[in-house]
Length: 280
Image (cartoon, rainbow, N blue to C red; front, side, top):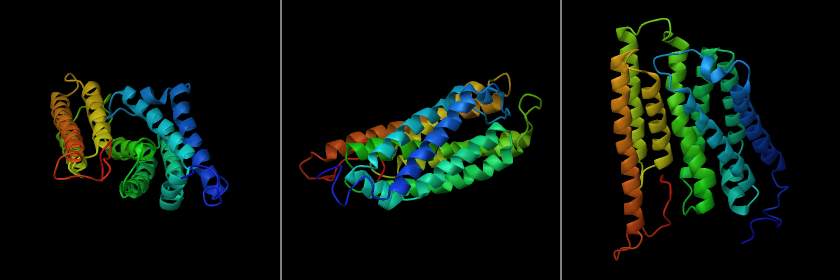
């Protein structure tokens, strides 16, 4: 099989969509770089809520966008064209646009607009996530350049929906003490994130490790930012949620081991190609 060239897999086929994917990825990456190097220091000067994680947690974005750039290169291969161009199509440029508008809204502190854009972004990334998850017999490039970035993307943006809601409607943690409603809102949000992480862990025999890691990363960053001095209830609730989320990560690791062993047992269990990072 030829990865490049040929009439059916020519790099010039669907050229507009391929260029849109590349431009969109560069646009969103540039927006994230700007938030880091801008004189306003957005990551450290935005609205502080009781669901805001430590600023360093947002550096997961460069990892996601670097992987997406790899996805844009992969689209020029025969296998990449089959998944990225024919399955995902224009949903990836749409996701880049929504993500860019979210970053812009967040930068200018229009948090309600940011919440709207993030909700739409999660909807689109969920569709892409399902498109990728439905691909059977994934190879190594599929795992690293398709499943890994969009699993991380999906898990991380779900966390950001909750954060955006607190930024849009929650109190400022620097100037206002946490009232019972705020504490209840944080606790319910933590429970919902645990439910989502559990669903990831049990979505297949091997679970979905990258998505679980994204949520766990967010929760531990939340523990660091929401100190006991600020509010003990939120700190220890987040700590409990982060530890429980580690259990879902371990469930995925165990599932991957079982899936790998299943390929080689004498009953032929799991004889299909192993999904190295989880997911269907």
